[in-house]
Length: 47
Image 1 (cartoon, rainbow, N blue to C red):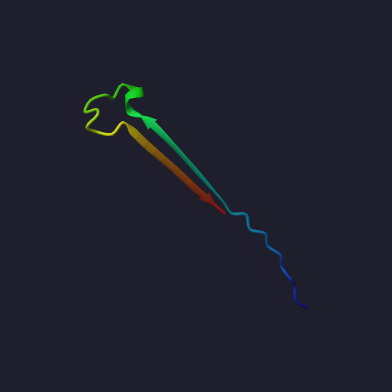
Image 2: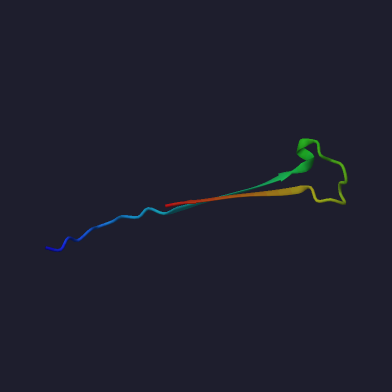
């Protein structure tokens, strides 16, 4: 007798991105020679 196995797979990806200004946090040294925007990318994947 053959058994048929049914398997469900759940896979998801989360991506989050934010842009902060260094000057908003008091880091004004070397402005405007050094860029003010800092981009933070966070990505996670699970299955």
